[in-house]
Image: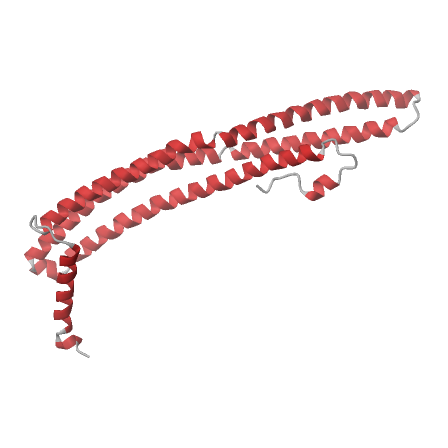
Length: 256
């Protein structure tokens, strides 16, 4: 976060710090954890959004291949080939619907929760700034009281000293309240991150499993239709491709 108020310049300007260095370092440590959590959450949100975009591209690209093949002259003249592409295109329509369902589920269970979690950090920023303001006021009141303590205890100075003491007490109470609240809430927020993110992670895994299951089913049916319910190994397909490639190379238009 760019709003960390405890840079070297701000802390070194205090003459007599009202906050001890260990206490300041402890707060900075918690603030760094919050900073890291915000960065991670924003990264996760961006990556999840990219995932939905990639899913759409994958689905649309494969459907585009079948559509382009259907528009070729080969499909118009070769019924057997056209039937195969028709079956492939129909399978792609099914997969496109399954991908749409996956992205809707992904948006609802991952993107929306991450977006809501990210929206909390600006409130934390406001709270930290408010704490810094109360710390500055605390320091200001402490310096003012010290100034009156060094002066002669005359009537006017005694009155001002008493007023500065009351102002210091109020400023100290306000800072203590702000500091205590943050030192309690920041660790709670960090500790609860797992409980918040775990349902989204489980939902994403479940969505992936569901989509993959449907893909296996659709492509399995497509494979059976294309092969006339015959099973082919990877070696069989490789042999067929190699045989066709050999025949192509034997043509005069491909000769060196």
